[in-house]
Length: 431
Image 1 (cartoon, rainbow, N blue to C red):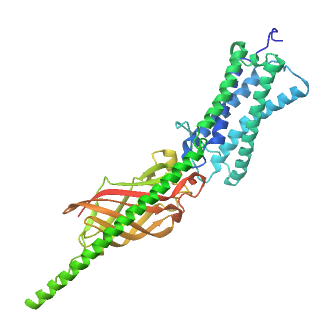
Image 2 (image 1 turned 90 degrees about the vertical axis):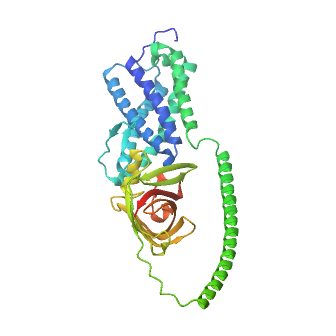
Image 3 (image 1 turned 120 degrees about the horizontal axis):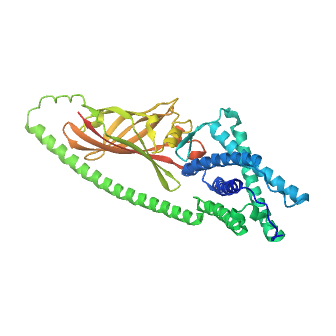
């Protein structure tokens, strides 16, 4: 039968067949292998883009099939019926998987916009949010069905080529070359496997676990060493301060005995107010499975009343516009505004107000106060330093915030995020 002429598919059908095959191999691999947390965001966006591409190619393939004659089947009976069933189900999968995926992102509470390949905005379907759980289940079932059909289709093609030798591969090959078809088939399988193995989390987890454990141990040891040094220094400072106090009291008693009573001390005036100058920064960093996610707030302001030499009467109030949060990606920035993160429609701002400020060093301070975020208020401490003199000072500091205490990051996209978020700020202030 290899010597008999074989009726081939049209060039358009051949081109669409292999384009869809290669795209499906990559799409199935990404779907099963991508991380389902913040680290997989870019892969998730690409997965959506590739899915819509497959949907468009499939529609074009169906139109082409209806308008162009196809070669007759090479095999009848049960095997021929099974081959037709696989083909029909493949079309169901190639249409159903992208459509259910489209329905999922259209009805998800997170409302992540779809931008094809980061260039072309793609609309959401006007569907009720109540169907989201069902669409997720159907999409997952279709994914497993698609994987099984993909394997069956490849196995059937190899059976015809190796066992039946009926020239079936040549019908769907450029220039009728069975060798070219085999090369494309191998490339499709290698592409799928290569994509899957290259995705984060599909390598050797044991090495990662050992590295993470080592990092934790080192961090604990480092923290313990620092605490011990600080404890010794504090003890030395305490002993020195006690001796100084005794000497000062003795000197004061001698002075009182030798001199006449002095006039009453003049009461200190109110602490000065400071204006926060433009150009400052307010950034945040959170660990995501060993890698850092960095963001910033573009709009924030506040009022400061403080005497650096006598901070006891200080008052610090900062207001942050949560919608100005940015991770450097427009789609991720919109995610931050959703209900799983800042829910900016209901809670547009976060505020911090100090209740006390104390001096901890020559130019260092600690403020204790209340952070109000997403309808929740919790005690929060910040540390900062001052530099400069006179009417202009430079301020820099940081705080560690427990995002879980404020229900920030509650869905699957935040599953890999650490609970602690480090916030850093720097700005100039003028009196």
